Every structure is written in structure tokens, then in C-alpha cells.
Length: 112
Length: 113
Image (cartoon, rainbow over all chains, first blue to last red):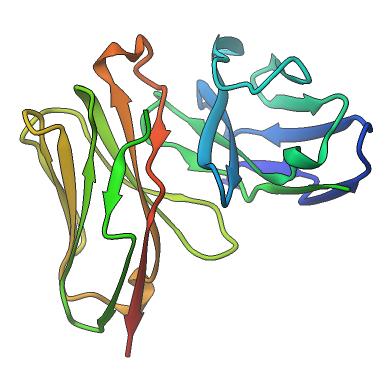
């Protein structure tokens, strides 16, 4: 299996621009998680889906962030408009039953 | 609320043992352990779902004390490959979501030859 695939691996953008991060989970996994990792705040859960349905989005920082999962093999995390404080590594993880999670390689986002 | 990990960092020689602790102020449903190497993604090590449960993974094992709301990760006869940052993640009984993981700030483990 190819594992969780994320794209792009690196993204540099300017403040105010829209950013879209993409994730392809492991086939057959029913759960998908989006995390953000920074030195200051550590690893934070943003939102997770079960069978393509958002279950808990309490970690989404504000309305500028949105996530979708249109089908079992694809999810997006969108930031519009982006701000410098959004700079972080964003991880997508998938899980067969929601417990053991398999993380993708991450997207390193830099907002100038 | 974020679980508290201790120590923040530990350096040991190959073959030595280490213990990493994780404690929470809230009643726990489960404790998860992950290891992250620099520049890489976290990798799942184990999950403990019941109080008093112990699990093992090669020479890495963990315990979960439900009453004390804490877990410990034991690394025995450490190898160079054990180096990395270890995170505990907890799910609170009160969270309402059995998959809502809150991670600690991590323990940086360095194994020297």
C-alpha cells in the first residue's frame, strides 16, 4: 500500500491567498484526520471524518479554515484567506477504526 | 486539555533503559503513543484502552493507570533507531468523541552509540 498521500509537500504563499491542501487516505480506512503541528502549539487535531462525514471540527481555528471529504479517497483542507500565523506542517492521517492512525508525510505551509 | 509529558528530553547510551511519563488532569478513555523522527510524520506505536492495560512492541512497552490518569512508556535496551520525539495522545472520557486525540508536547529521546 502506498500509505497516506498528501500534496503539495511544500507550499509557500502570500498573506491573503487561498491555500488548498490535499489528502488521499489509505484505501479501506473509514476515518480521516487533519492535524496541524507547530513548535508553539505542538500537534493539534483540527477535524476528523468518519465515512466521509465530518464528526468533530472543534479544533478548526476559525472560519477561514474549511475541510471537505467528497468521497472515501480524497479530502481537502482549505485556508482562505491565509495569514502568517497559519504557517505550520499540516498532517493528514487515516485509520481503519479511528484508533491507530497512519500519518501522511505532511505539507509544510509557509505564509509570507 | 493537553496531557503533560515528562521528561521533556532524555539522552542515553545504546542499551540503556528509559521511561517516559504522560499524565492527565482528566479521566481517560485511552492513551496512544507515537514516535516522530525529525522531519518525518508521527508513527503509531501502541494504544491502551483499558485501565491497567500493558502492551508491548518489540522492546517498547507501556502501561496505563486509569486511577492515576497516567501512562508510562518503557524503552528497554534502547537502540539507535529509538531516537526521536515521543508523543502521548489522550482521549478524555468527557470529550464525547472517542477519536478526539489531544497530544502532549513530546519527549525528545536521543540514543548515543
